[in-house]
Figure: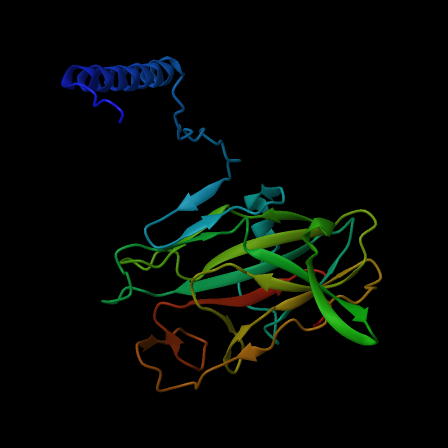
Amino acid sequence: MMPRRSGIGRAIVVVAIVAVLLVALGANFLFFASSPGTSTSIPTSSNVTLPSTSSFTSSTTQVTSSPNPVTVDPSILEYCPSTSSNSSGFIGAAVGGSAPSVICLKFFYFNAFKGYNASSPLVLNITGALSIAAVESVYSEGLAYPEVFDGSQNFTFTVSQAQLAIGGPTNENEGAVVAFSLTANAGASGSYELGLFPSAVFSLWLLNPQEPEQCGYYGELVAGNGFPNYAQSTGGCLTYPPSGVPSSYTIGGVPYELMIGDLYFAVIGVTNSTGY
């Protein structure tokens, strides 16, 4: 029979085991303490400098200047008649490279009425007012699809003023006339659709002789021989009844009511007109 271990022997064994465990734990502690710590850092976003744009800001709307260079020349107002000389209302202009076409527009905006932000006038960005659209048919699998592109790069613009503040509590600049001069760049040719305030946040109406019209475009520009024909109707027109309009007003020579808070314009003259 095997002799039984004494109590002293058992105690020695236990102390030895505990010592081994302490040594192992101490080694692990020293390993982790001496290892470089791994940290997750959140990168600080760098300051990004955005391209600056010229803009006009008012309490009613903010407008940004056209990406194309636009010249301001008040003298082109001399080409504008004192009364309307455009019977159809729409704009038709032959834009040559030597003789520019001057388009004269008269604006009306009435907001001096409670609930229509009457404390400030509406500030219009004239340098970015015009848009020139071109529509081209793209064929795929025997079907034609309209593709719209910007045709303004084919023209040079001059305006009579950079901005127009209109309306407000004193009806500022009601009936103001603004002139736009357009010249076709060298080699440009084609028929294009002319729009007005394409990115506006307000409602815009053309003062036609019999009724107001809100359209996708308001005229046609012809450069060179007029071909290719890019003026392929990018939008129709809307109108409203001549009377019974809530919150409306009237102006002389217009046989229908105008809505408060909407911008109206009349075509009073076009040089080198095509009679569109």
